Image (tube, rainbow, N blue to C red; front, top):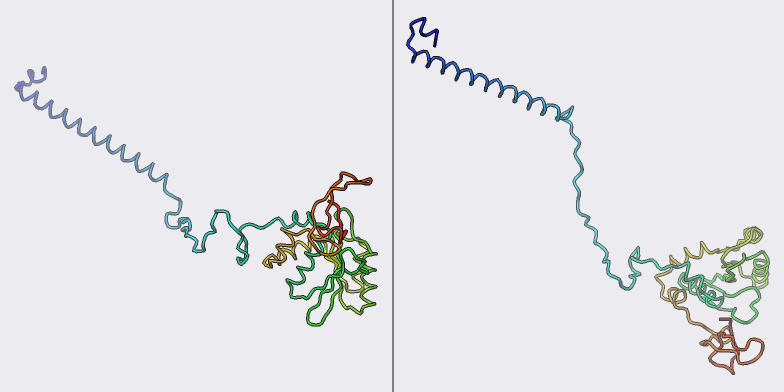
Length: 261
């Protein structure tokens, strides 16, 4: 205002000039702020970009499996499937068998393999052989030892070998839970196969499609070792075992077959 008075410029013109300068100053300041903000955005964007924008890691596309899904609902086992949805506990069921049921299961396994089986054991003296399995005219002598607490020794192999020689049977099997080293050594010299628990479980699993094998393992009937008839639980009425329960033949007194409970 003082300059305007000294220079003789009208006051209104001086005020107009000052307002114009102020507007231009604000405009330039706004452009400067905008430029700075744009620069910051570009710097941030540059820092987030990958080192090599051309080569990028691409995750594989997930595809839906075309194989049919198994039903989660419980139901009977489909033995025709390569892998059953529920595999029975073969080992536990095997441990529950008595010696007579063990022989029956072994016979069922040979029959499932296409053999004709003759049972010689049971409660009678068997001469070291419980079963005779035959296929294509070839006979095989089989001895079963369902001993849970100790190993099958060399004596069992000797007895089987003696019967094989006497009866001219070329092949022999001993089926038991475990064997001693001497038993393995003698059996190896004479071509006798020893089937221990591990091999037996695998044999059973491979034969579970056979109905007789499944029944012999999971639902074995209690059969009399003398006559093969049904057995029932009885109670001793006299003697030193009075009051004790045991398995007795249903045909008693015609058959006096019995087994420990």
